[in-house]
Image (cartoon, rainbow over all chains, first blue to last red; front, side):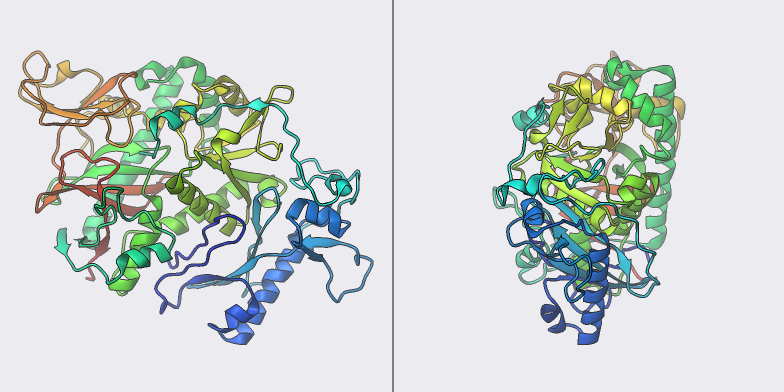
Length: 194
Length: 402
C-alpha cells in the first residue's frame, strides 16, 4: 500500500485542538477526545478508559511540575492546572501539573496509541507518545519540580521558567533583544510558497 | 494514466471544511480544490515517478555538494557571505541538519518517454495539506478500496522522529521546535499547524508563532520567541534567501553556522531551492533521461527551440515566460505564454520546453513529494494555461487496482 494508514490529525487553532477524522467507517483513524465521556459515545468504554489512563499516565510522567497552583497557572493559564497526584496523597501532594486539554487515540495497522495534548500559557504545545499495546518505557528522569515563588530551580534548557508565580496570575513577558526583522520581504510581496 | 471526469461529492465544500481545509475556493469564486476530475495511474506509472524523483534528488544532492565544495554560490543566485551557514549545515546533512521535505514538479505524459523534472521546491513547498490529508480523505470517501501515492504524513512523522533521535534535548522535551510563518496568513498558519501536529505526534514540544515576532539578543547571540525564550530549532515556512537579507540576516547566518539555532529547512536547502541548480544538474549529467537541457544563458539553445525562462529565485510560477528562440538566442516574436511578478532581480535560468500531461485542455504538473531522500506522495496541479501558478487547481489522484 502506498498511502498512509491514517491521516487524522488535529489542527492547533488557538488553545483547544480541533478534532477531525475522515472516512468515518475506517478502522484506521485517530481521534482527539476532550473527555472519556465524549470517547464512549463512539468507542467501547473499556478502550476509552484504557486510552485515557495511558494518556494520563504519560502526561503525569512527563508533564512539567510546579510547586503550587499559582506557579502552575502563571505559566499554563488560569484554571488550567490540577494536582499531580489526584487520590495519591503522598509527599507530592502540593505538586501541580497542567491539565491536558484532550487525548488522542489512534488505531492503525501497527497498533494503537494514545497521547495527551496540552498547551501552556506561552503557547507551547506538548504531547506524550505511548503505544497502548507496548510495554511502557521506563520513566524519564525529570529534574523539573519547580520552586513556586521566586524559586531557584535549575531550568537551563527548560521552557518552564521558575519564579513567575510570585506575582500571582498575571503573566507578563519580558522583552529582551530587538526585533529580528523577519517577514518584511514576504509582507510586501504576499508570500505563499512555491 | 488517464484523467477521469467525475461528479464531485455532494457537499464537498463542507467535507473539506470539516477536515480543516477551508481554502477550497479562490477569492474570485473559482475552484482551487477540483474534484470534478481525478487522475488515475497504474502502479507501474507511480513507481516510474517515484524512481525518477529519488534519482533526480540524488543528483540534486550531488550538485549541492558541487556548489559547496567549489564555492559556486553566485551561479545559484546566493551571496557568498551566506556560505558559513550553508557549509556548516551541509557537513551535518545526515544528522542534525537533515532535510525535512521538498516537492518536485514533473512533466510527463506517460506515452513512452521518461518523466522530466522541471524543478525542485526544496524549501517552502506548497499544497502539503491538500496532498497529505484532503486527497486522502477524498479517496477514503469515494474509492476506499483504491490506493494512492501518499504516505506523506507517515513519512513526515518519521522525519520528525529522526530529528528527535539526533537531539537528546528534543527527545527529553527540554528543547522545543518553533514553527514560524507570516501571520496573519490563514493558509500558511494551517500548514504550520499541520506540521506542528506531526511533530507532536512524534513526541516533541512545539510552539507556533509569527515570524515577525522573532527577536534577536545581541548579548547572547540567540534568537528569541515572543515569550523571550531562546529558539533552538526553527521550522520556518519562509524562504532562507529572504531571511538572510532582512535586518538580522547576517546574525542568522552566524548563529546557524555555529549551531546556536537549527533551522528547518537547513541552510544548505537554499542551494537546492535555487532554480539555477538545474543548470548545474544538466552540466553535470548531460543527456540524463529525467532532466531537460537547462542553462544560465540562452545562447546554447539551437535556433527554433522553445525555451522556458524562470527567475533563479522565483516562486509561484511568477515571471515565467515561454518563447521560441532565434539564431542569436533571442525570443522570436511574442512569447507563447508569460506571467508577471516581482522576481526580476536575481538572474534567470533557461530550460528546454516540454509539454505537461494534457487532457481536455487541462495541463497537469505532477508534484512528487520527498521526505528526506525518499519519494512519498503525489499532488497534481492543473491549469488551462501552460504555466502552473499559485491558483492552479489541485486535482486528486488514485492508483487503479491491478
